[in-house]
Image (cartoon, rainbow, N blue to C red; front, side, top):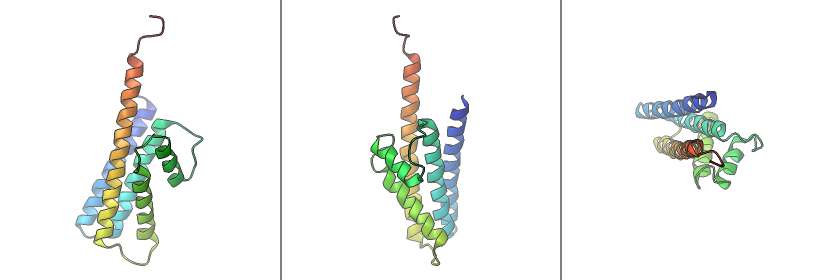
Length: 141
């Protein structure tokens, strides 16, 4: 396993744990915390796919960067909507003077889960592609 593979795995594990934490907080009625942890999951998952993709010229703004990934087919169509929803949900939970309703927390968790699954699928595709390339015979043989 390379250093970047280890980092990718670590970020995806953190994303998965953050989703479980979001669900646990939701089950206890801590809706603001649930929404916030769901967003952390999306950020961790996107960090993993960013490491895997290695394109430093993409925009630095995270929402714009996700949109570029979708536009260039590096993430499935619609993934940016889930990510953007998760980011705005966190802003609402962290910076608003109102409490997150249960439905808002549930929506935050479901959008973060959908984004996590999109990233997980794309990482699997990237790894499969890399494995196939490494198994190809050298040219001229």
